[in-house]
Image 1 (cartoon, rainbow, N blue to C red):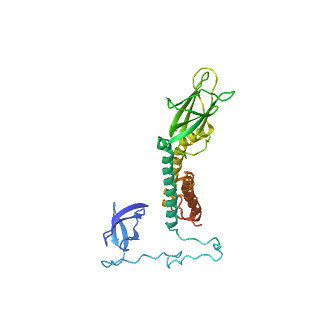
Image 2 (cartoon, rainbow, N blue to C red; image 1 turned 135 degrees about the horizontal axis):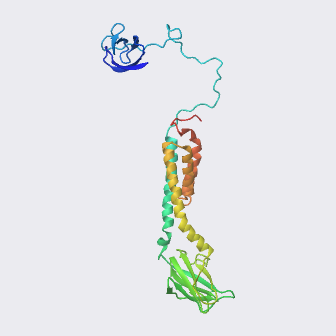
Image 3 (cartoon, helix red, strand yellow; image 1 turned 90 degrees about the vertical axis):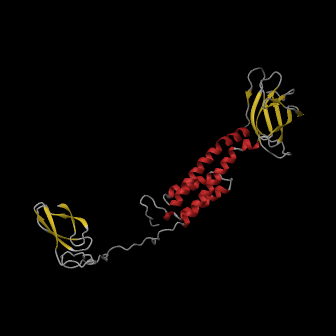
Length: 314
């Protein structure tokens, strides 16, 4: 068989047809006007002529009927065999509308945006607290044998005015923010500590890690010894890492909101809703919005397309 391009002599429509290689004549119909055409080989060319009466101008012949096995009668309509098992599964749903998934996308988006806002707030806490308030702090200084007297306290390198409240305990007032405390005592190595003094109530009782800082000095001479308090170390680690975790979780949530809006991937929408809740936007607002989105997603699972873009039955 070979393909031959031709122009219909009735409607002048350009198309092509498959012809036998042995040079015999063949018949076919025009796809445009439905006229029956005869293809007559003529040396190297093929002559195309109408095989029947010409079709009136401006009209088209009806499509040819599909012939049955005998070739002389229309084929019978397709029927379902009587012994074919009937479908007994759950009722098929119509294509889901975008309203449900749009609401889920908005919930995940809101949770993610609150996470981004909270990440920024946590990131700027040290700078935001700097110099906002004069906070009274207590410093307890001791060595391996007991409290120490004649102690000097340097705050960011400047000597502070100390008031001894009891042996080894001293009070002073410092400006809020990140501060470096250095304690000196005769016959002992200096002790240093980086602390975050945040804004607090003026009548707050001495609380370790907030406004109470303890130093244990080593006897002898040498370089200053860096000291840490568990509460302060945990607080500073949280301020260092939490903003980046919140940022990452919020970005994953934004991807999930896009997947829910476009209905491209149920799994991506689930992951995004989960991480938008873990971003802890405004502490409780973001987690609540993310959990609501996760619950609603289970009811809208059938609305998501996967690889084919079709909507699978439930």
